[in-house]
Amino acid sequence: MVIGIRAFLPTLRAMSLPRVVVTPNLLGRTLGPPGDRMAQRSALLAALELLESARAGGEVRTIEDRPFVPVRSLTQRETTSLE
Image 1: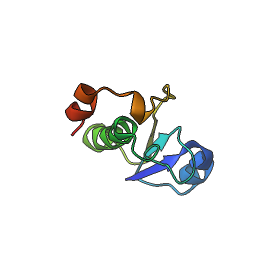
Image 2: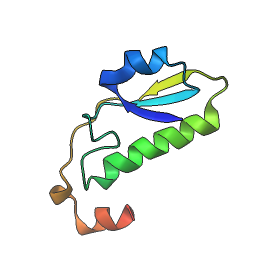
Image 3: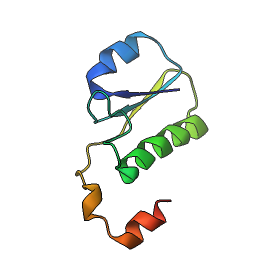
């Protein structure tokens, strides 16, 4: 299982990896921006879901772009539910 960024999609496909989740994030932030628990959790859950549901090797899934929600804009209730 590999989680990679969209910029490396052609290389990831060429490597014939068993399962790949591709995120829309930047280099160095594969799972999401630092401190952005929601984005990081989303990437990890997508990877776990792929492990559970893939029917054959070589499957590639892309996490669609999503609006960036800065950590500071989360309410206390939202951040507590992420823990």
